Image (cartoon, rainbow, N blue to C red; front, side, top):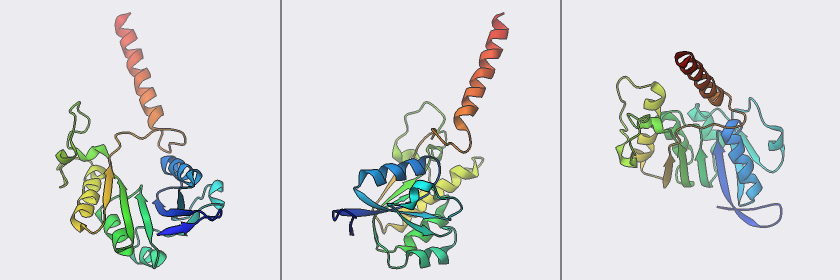
Length: 196
């Protein structure tokens, strides 16, 4: 579905879910600046970055409520859906159902943790990720496996799944970078005390 921009140019439509904080926010800013897409951000609306007040469309909705999602997306169609925060299979099912037949391409942000031993030095291939729960693994990894499995099993929309290993950068809400710097400093101190 093409959208006529404020300049009269036809651009593709893109729905971004999980685009108001951290790297999702940065991605939305870049997509909006590119002027190649008319970007719509679906958000719970708890916090909206000031720069989102112009140039983007907003849909306020709790994506974990299937009925609310169905209502919010009724009649809408998108060339691209970027699902940056699907936490489990239910999230994927609800979104695909709400946009049944009206998604050109679905991009699902997963995690490298879907590989059962993701932290090893093994060079993983896409097909080596078990999409069934792995006993003893974090629920986050198993929930992401379920999200991927649902998208595959639904088979109703073209998709791409991307699996970042670590996401870090400005505005990281959980302090990943600081954590690794602190651990490195601790180990450096330990090493120095052993050498002295």
